[in-house]
Amino acid sequence: MDRNRRVDSGRFGRFAADPDGGGRGGAAEEDVLRHDQHVAAKQQRPDHDGEPDAAQPEPPPDDGVRGARAGDRGECPASLTAVGAQDTRFPTAAASPGRATAPSGDEVPRVAVVGANGYGRWHRRVIAPLHAAGRLRLVALVDVRPVEDDPAAPVPDGTVVHTDHREMLRTTRPDVVVVCTPPHTHLPIALDCLAAGADLLLEKPPVLSAAEHRELSAVLTATGRVCQVGFQALGSAALAELTDAVRAGRLGTVTGIATVAAWQRPDAYYARAPWAGRRTLHGRPVLDGALANPLAHAVMQCLAVAEAAGGAPVEPVRIEVERYRVRPIEVDDTATLRVRSRSGPPIVAAVTLAGEDLVAGEVIVTGTAGRAVLEYPTDRLLLPGDASPREVPGRRGLLANLLDHRADPTGVPLIAPLAGTAPFTTVLEAVTAAPEPTLLDGDLVTATGAGPDRVLTIRGIGRLLRRAADEGALLSELGVPWAVEPHRRDLDGRERQPAATHRPA
Image (cartoon, rainbow, N blue to C red; front, top):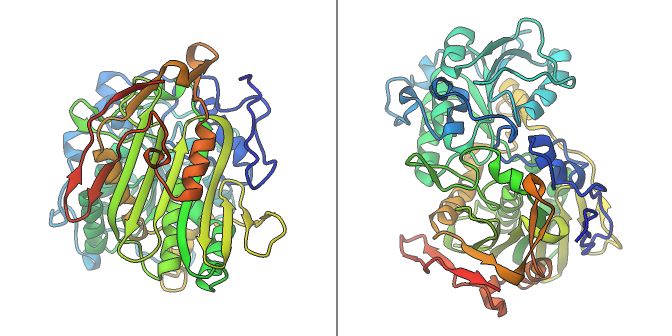
């Protein structure tokens, strides 16, 4: 396969693809994410994989204990140890030392970014026009590395740069903190921010487990603060139109929801940080993989549609997952997932980072009166009765929405509140508890390129994943010879775990 990757036109025909074979090469993060920038040309930003720059060196040992990017080394400072909701660091809402949730008069919210390099640059680019318009004041940036210049995100005069987020919280006392550090550092940093009286924009996935989710929720309640989670695709006008159509009965009774996506990641992607492609690092759990990071938006959108169909948040009762990999990593780069809920339709996710043909990402909703398809990176929507997919413009930014919510808590709901992501955390915990993914190799896998630009693809995977999404099935249920029995978790606590295997072609 040459660098001009084929595009699976699927139901949508042509969409914005990378003419240079994006997502293929370069060790720097923006090269690693080039695929997302092109196929998501209509998004306000590409999908976040929670990674620092792949090209940057691991921080020196003393930096690993000083703040925001401690997670790069899989370590967490002792003072960042997760604490319970009863910890005395967390005053009640009435006694919270932070500023009021709704700024009074002409008070401008003070905003800080923890994790200012790597993907933090995208947040800085979102912040820059809001700062210029006087909607917020960027008061601090935190990273253990020197903050990189970015013409689209200049550091305003007066903005203080720190290497330790705790020192920043003590000296700057921001109203809002944007946290975009590696996922396994989210909870301790978030707890520190809440203890300082700040509201949060916390990148996805917000936490690693249901227990962490409950802990963070309890602290939010105790402090009276709010947390927006970085599922920016939930701000899509196209998704809103789809969920409105589901609620209005245009599809009849919804019988199934699925997502399919086929992307690529080069070897450089798995060298982007010491925790990349890992389940644990230095004895601490970390979080990576196709379902947990780059394609988490697809899963979250399916859960949002299921909530619209069922009229209540999804309550999973059984989660089944098959995980595969084409490299010696510890997490999935290819997976099929099925979620059955207490009420509502089943959800299937069929995704890969080893695709031959590019499938940008579709959310497919099947009902008794028709089918709808949302290509979520490009906001193109096909509803029953439409002759062809159409772009639905309009995305509400998460940070702007958080500022509006702070000013009018009752009138402006958060787009992605932490509470709304609880079903995603439940699903994610089941995925990460599954056995090590099955290794695929031999003639089944094709290598293209060399060095950090090398890409591995699975023969015929796009066709198989599309079939899984269309039929609501797992790969093992389609007669795929290399597929394995799924890991199943029943939410009554029972689990059935197949042994991890190696499946050559």
